[in-house]
Image (cartoon, rainbow, N blue to C red):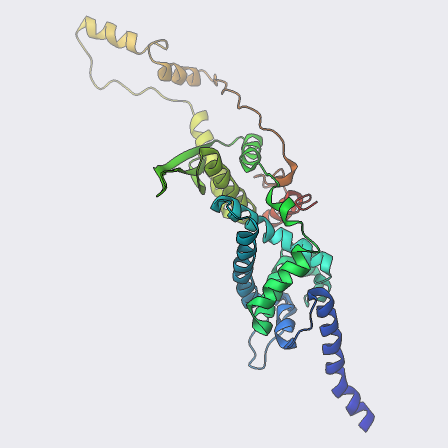
Length: 353
């Protein structure tokens, strides 16, 4: 091998690192120090890379760290910017800013997605890859330059240039309306169960609610009004519908069992003993009449194949910001992963417009 070939091979990694550093500088707004952290942050598990010890090398650990740092840094920024606002407002604002969908959009707009190392087919089917990479990048920044570098990145690069924090904070999403719309479409029963009603140390009322869908426990929410608590519990339930296929399965399994029981004809139980008292017979006859006992009247209707029409549910206003129209329970439809991915994409199509 010629000496020039050896020199070229030695220079190649340094050239690649230089290009990566320049790309990261354009994305972050400052020059990275330890490039190895960022290489890991941009490595998806589908790439199949391994470290020197033969262990899988990917960005999942940095993603965990970055998620925690984003909560802390964005929470700090929101706390200082919106002075006097209550905890519920601050939590909701932070959640919208650091949602996986919002981070995914930022990663795409910044060009971060183009730097991710992964298999091509995995990239096209994984709707969370970009958002995960953004979180991993934040974890790498923290390890490379510390907390203040993460805050500087979020304030100057993200919130100043790419995201209008005030618009996001005051953008109202009616989560309760969205959830009601989805339950109506899929003909599942929903209720808000009050968990508590107390007062805080200042004497302000505090309410706690939990969503129940077909008897399956959904999200919980606590607030200074019933409306706020129900909104928060609805939001948590919507997030579970997006991210937990098993939660959807449990709901429709419960619905299936309920409807099966309602549709089966009720067979009258045999009398345990005959009464010789005419008055007792008369009293029993009256008590078994449909007018005297509506439930037994319904049972007789079911024996005759007659189903009573359920009362119509009040229609909910339509809000396109959290669309769950694609989350249904139909085995002939595409796979559940495709359903959830499609719902996620549609739900946040206009989230930051």
